Length: 249
Image (tube, rainbow, N blue to C red):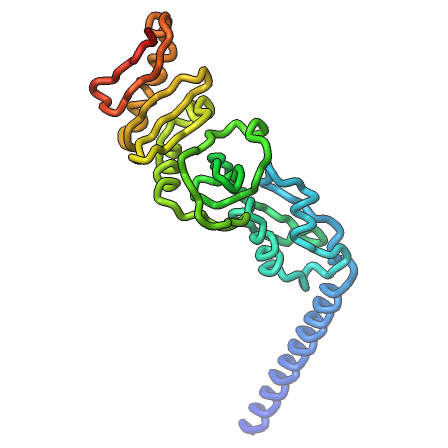
């Protein structure tokens, strides 16, 4: 009698398990076919984080076809497409169900304009060549001179040059509010830094050490009506402790 009861108990458990598996299978199939339905076809692309690029450019680079099932979208491939553009530093592609793709990008920020025999190059703070321009007046950035580039570079490439590295290091140490006042940064043969500010004043900075202190001195001088009462030829801040103001005769 005991054996019979065990058999009946096992049979009920097996039937319940089979019913559960059957329901689970139906649910899985229903979810699968629902996921493949037009409800999840991409109908909108949102773009975020851009300033220099346009939304239209981002969408063109991403090359996401409208009407594609959102679960079949290859996010990694889209990210790689966008990273081919020199202005794009980082990118993230996400799904916003049911039918929207969100493309968030982090752009490279232009830091300097490099003047060379090959033309004017816009670079970011890491020395990445962003684009070539014909007129420097279009961007309010320091123009770096005194650097010769032996090779032809293209957008997206990082320009490796010792003098350029020093120029970029210098710019990174200048307080943000003062960067726009620098019109030119020249590195001479001794690799000493010379800047020219908005009013054309020449300031000899020496090397790239103690830059914030030197820029504080520049700020004080340019705000002093007494010091500016006479025409200044140049200011020498090579030695921070003993700044020199050379007046015109």
